[in-house]
Image (cartoon, rainbow, N blue to C red; front, top):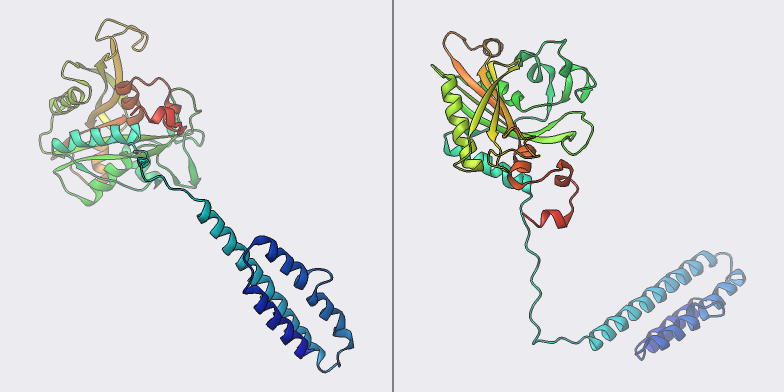
Amino acid sequence: MENEIRDIRHSFEEEMKNVTDAKTTEEMRIKYLGRKGLISGLMGKLPSVNEDERPSAGKELNILKTYIQKELERKKNELLSGEAKKGEKIDVTMPGILPEEGRLHPITKTLNEINDIFVSLGFKIAEGPEIEKEFYNFEALNIPPEHPSRDAFDTFYIKNDVLLRSHTSTVQIRIMEKTQPPIQAIMPGKVYRPDAVDASHSFMFHQVEGLLVDKDVKFSDLKGVLSLFTKRMFGEKTKTRFRPSFFPFTEPSAEVDISCIICRGKGCRVCSHTRWLEILGAGMVNPRVFEAVGYSPNKYTGFAFGMGVERIAMLKYGIDDIRLFFENDVRFLKQF
């Protein structure tokens, strides 16, 4: 049996030297591996081999079978590759195909522009974790336990007092915990709220919040910074309006509007004919927030503000559906 195995291997190797096409390769497969091939013939003889020699003979026969299979597969691939190269034609006169140029996402572009404006005004960029504790998301910001935003239906709770942050104000608290005034920073990042998705709401969106703390900071400083921001963001002719409002973490608080950039004060569907568009909230830091981080409200004052990046991008680019930002439709994204 061992001599027969050796002879078949030698015969196969010699014949393989003359194989030049796929047809011959297939004929070789049938001859050696087919149902009536040489390997099957030897397999049929195994029962007649001495019992002591049978395991060794069976092992050698399997090794030979595997070897022939691999060699035939290698030759087949080699011939196919050669045929492909033989039929390949290269027209050296054709111009090359340039890869398509990528673009920044409109949210990224808007976020970069917002950051650049505030950095030019002396603000630093600070970031923090997206998974937070209730203390940073609510308690330190003077949001009481009975406040609606702390309900399980209005916040993504992970477990007990751990949640996905609902605003980047959490970073303000972390900065004040570790840093003594003066502080001048903005906090961009993703935030999460369990809102039903529609044309103006998403369960995940982006915010930029700002904080300035020092001695003798006034509301007029806040108005000056935000008025300058809106002019750089939307144009020099943009007007700013502050309306009294309420936020637990600022006092006094205000909603900030800009003159409608669509109708330029004439009244249109976008501004509901009011000639104004709301873009952010702001106010003077509530003394209770200072107390939560160990600052003396008698020594320091400050202002804070926050805006939704998607809201700014929608106004800037005339987009009427927030869902377009996240659908990854290339036809939409190519416009920016």
